[in-house]
Length: 556
Image (cartoon, rainbow, N blue to C red; front, side):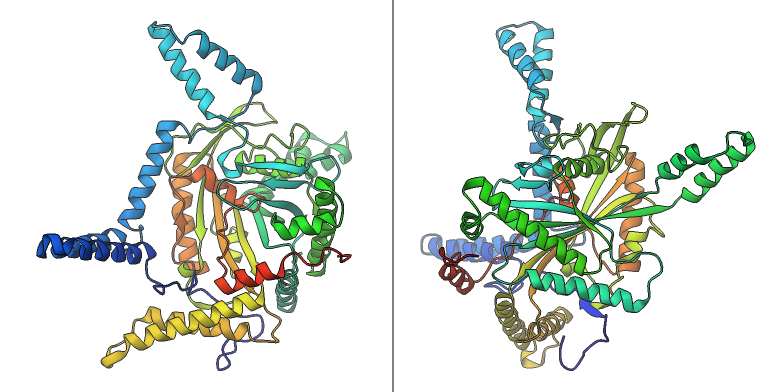
């Protein structure tokens, strides 16, 4: 915070900037680099074609500005990109998902080979259906592609091993937590809890820490009366009249009607880089060393969560994590149902075919009947937040469900950036923003409000990261997935969510991740997916390279 505007304790300012400044400041990078390319081509062809090349370059720049200009519905270029992505997925059946079955896959492959030369119309139609089913059959759904397990035994923490295409591989562990607040709590306890969680993040952001991302997850779902019903079956008087039993059942139904409960998880993410591998060698050879190092990291993470005022913290087993993922796709499955779950079976069948929804076909374990659930995911970014003072419970309206009566999952991915790197980036951004503001006010012009907001945000960030403050930097993004049992209900819930976020929470815009909703669902699963890591500066990369993984001869 700036020295002249220190807010009261427990209040912070969030919003206003969502990325660091690049070579072209905060401009649209596609437009900036496209303009440079067009000007370069114009200069090359001007000697040959004269004024025609100059006019063509000017027109091309104008068209680029039009198609890349952002609106509340995104730019024309973004919309075309989403539509092309959706058409490609439909044509290749990549939007569909069928859990992999080796026996079924072998049968389909054999059937395709046997009917390859047949010209019968029925055989051609069958071949198309078989090929489509085979193309949709995969080991993991799009939300967790490239996910396996380093440790998946019973009774031990499940360590997921991720190798998504185009990203750095990493390990993740999910923890079930009680949450910091239980029942009626005083404002002082709320502030203490927020400060304790901030201290926990700061303790894990040091350059020596292997942990890089923390993902709190809150699952909001209807109240489950199974425990109360079980108590009644074991304690009710057999001689009680039928009207008394019916009365108690009515009490349970009325008390749970419209009520929503929260389940909380926290996920840790450890990148599999050279530092991790070198540290693991001190614990043992190969994967055994990885597991022993992760056992130490898991215990440290657990102690940190307990220290920041959680009542209890338990790492989920691989089966427990898979059960949570299956439940988030098919809410008809109880959240803790693990008896029929294998760690390698994390997907529910999806027929695909929807532009702005992830549709799942599942089975209700209690009745055995088929059910269908519709999911839609949106991103919450810093530059779409209203710049305002916020308290620790600023997301309460989104979590409690006072005005939103749908199943939903809210999560934030928080990448921890060491103070030295964050301080350098903040100073660079402040210089860039102040230079932009000076240029805008030259010759008596009135500056844009956006420039003043960026300068104020950069000043606050630089003051927060002052030497000796104990603060570190973060790179974060939020996601929310809403779930309904029909297309119409999902459309209504989408409108209600957008209205609630704009009016009560201060989120001006929800960025719906349409055209790839099946993959977007994975951003709210407890697996650490969805965050684009921050790009360190050249100096920070050099310092990381010089630091290496530490002395090989050191004990730790």
